Image (cartoon, rainbow, N blue to C red; front, side):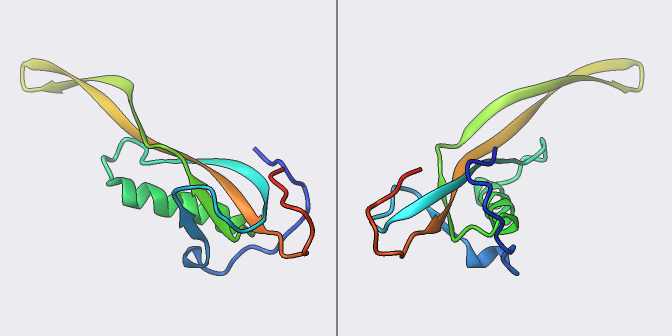
Length: 112
């Protein structure tokens, strides 16, 4: 969800986007609330965090403040194997974050 509609060029590489796990001490502006998940592939949260950084890079963010990880049950599937039917539930790992840009304008702190 875009919070700030100012157009910014995308970052060339997701590694240019810092992953922060607490509020930074430096002034910043919030530009979007973003979410990434493992689409049920049972990826480690580090890989989901990378996807979050990739999404932030597309928006031109300098950093993303990473929220708490969430694991939820997704869709249930019936899988036929031979003469038996098995039920499987998909588990989805999700991270939500706030994409930010640094505000080095020298003005007051802005947490918009």
